[in-house]
Image (cartoon, rainbow, N blue to C red):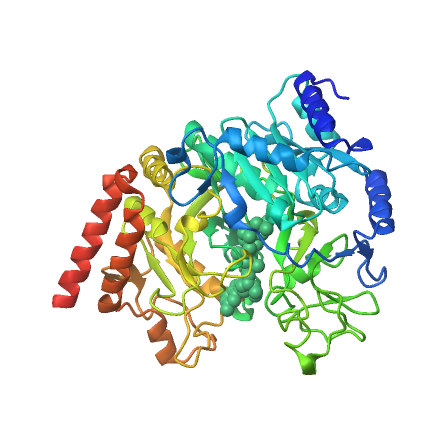
Length: 595
Ligand code: GTP
Ligand code: SPV
Ligand code: MN
């Protein structure tokens, strides 16, 4: 029971429907966490890792059918289909509630239902949002305690009549046939059934902080985005912040925690992590755009993480971290593809099958020891590069916005949009190769505007219009850029070393944002002149450096035809300004090819 009548009535309603044996309120104390871990261990939901090597860390294996977001089972339940738009799956609110209630009915018999009050953003700050998640999954509770500010403080911030997002989660039996991830933005409600996986089940994250929040942000004049936030301190001691929207598993965590390459580190460059996945952006009193990270932890991709690619992440996950679907050694240590430590003895893969690197591909685990979308859940507070401003309720001022994609061809390493409107077009026509973060065919190219395709809680045509409106309303808007760390050569090798070296590109971006540094104009935007990017000591051959920055108008003419087909899906709802940008790009390409 709380002091909040509406909250209590709602909990009573769900309790009567799902019929748990017990209802337990989560208050967020360390003693409580220890008790919850003990229960989770005794029920087999998690195992403790080696207490010497990974103190306070837990290991969890998902159901094999439940290892990534299931976008085809994710719905926006608005009164009209038009409101959800052509890129979202839609269900009427009546159908949504009816189906979810039928699945949830009696499903918690014999189980405990946990009540998790949580705050996205600092509890009590004017920009934060409170949610309350009901769940029958202890694994979800333990993750929520890391990813959100959960417990007493959130409940206190709610008072006796504060607004909150009602988040109902039932893992049921993790049956994909009972899986539904439903959003009711008109009611401030989320219902998720049949999955225990991160983005499907930790409802504060993608469901609340992106889908529900983006819907609210349009009404209230701000932006909820799938973006990292990072500060770059230069040798003079000045720190400037950028945000970057990259699709799932395309490098946000890595850029947010970047380690400067040795020569730049020696000159005094430092990186300050503010957030790695979600940014809420508002116009500040000074006319600039300010960004807040509403999360409290990192839910990061494990494979590829090592002390060379991301030492900050490795330091972050040494303790109090939950590892999901990675490989597990007999000694209680973890391993994954791309780890730079030896395979532990007696390793079992993410399915629990003994892992023999010599017979890879024959053990039913897709040939991997760790699932490609295996993850760590770690407290942000443990990150060595965490910014002192990461909990500043005003956020940090943004100097540049980056859109980025995974494209083996076409898109150069970096280019700058001509202005905000053109930048919105660049974001709206972002295409990226699919990754393992969602079910579906890895590698297939798909449009993922602003990296928000799976996360926009309303019609994306209206979302583009909202971005255009924001541009008019921000007195001092950040410049917009597009980056691509993933261009490949004919042999299929990455042309760009990426990771720490990405700071070279970010430095050019920041210089351009200050009106410094040189660029050449191309039909798609400004590209650095060959001497403008500081590549000293970067292991890239001169011909590869040239290729990385090359813009081929003939190739872009094909691209723009497919952009046109994509944009046409939005019909008359698409802003004419987007079409004007499209025509202008077409014209620039035509005259460039003709010349
Ligand atoms: P979500 O948490 O799914 O939203 O993903 P994210 O955007 O935070 O992705 P993350 O930083 O975890 O990167 C995903 C994968 O991309 C990892 O396997 C990384 O090793 C790899 N990666 C990240 N940055 C780079 C880069 O600069 N170059 C290359 N080649 N790979 C990179
Ligand atoms: C993503 O898929 O973009 C993630 C992981 O950040 S999840 O929380 O599952 O959405
Ligand atoms: Mn993400």
